[in-house]
Length: 303
Image 1 (cartoon, rainbow, N blue to C red):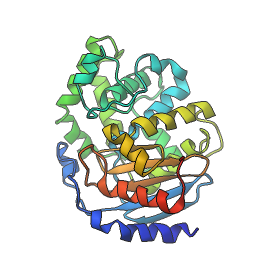
Image 2 (tube, rainbow, N blue to C red; image 1 turned 60 degrees about the horizontal axis):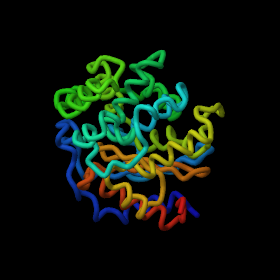
Image 3 (tube, rainbow, N blue to C red; image 1 turned 90 degrees about the vertical axis):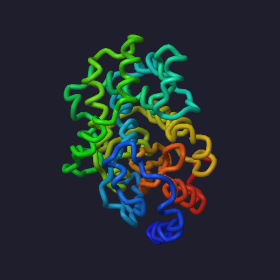
């Protein structure tokens, strides 16, 4: 298979989807991004990269960062986090308060906002450099030492984060945060506001396709831990559209409201797509279509 020709062809195939959906306007700085962008990158386990479209354009990774925060917590703290967050699909919007209250402050999974706040709280407690831990991991695995938080996006998100503040205060009221709410929110917003390209993210995600092995050959996670992150990505990584994602794409994946999606082909490669127009569940419309096309034409699906 000629991977480069395939990606170039996918860029042309999904053009009718560009502009569909809505850009995430509830964070004003994200809403300023044009909806007609699309990029796709594939990184093999060995580090070979194929890319097409706007694959080198940096965008706000948003909830994709949750995967890397969870990986760091599992790597440093084992399975303790699962006493504070469940591993089940939510079936509700990613920022739902109703479900959290119904389940007494234990978030349904680590990829909805409440669950990610709990993971971030734990990372603050165990990391030597909690304010930069996720950024440093992404720099190391992508090979891009210039990766940084987009301060304008972070400020915009901080000024429009009333729902996340509510979630954090409710978690604290239930005894499920160890650190001050403001510290947890600052760290969470910072990691979500990292700016990366499709190629950066595809490279940074390779440990998920390599049984937990980092780019330098050392282990970040054990094979069982890697399997479990991929399992939770498959069932929970695209919010209340996880079933549709599994049906259409058939890979573990994690989306963000910046329009990015990472997908993992275990023991083979990682894929990152980006297009800012979002469907009703907060996932990129063109990105979903592109990953559907990719797995259909390559046969690279866990199914």
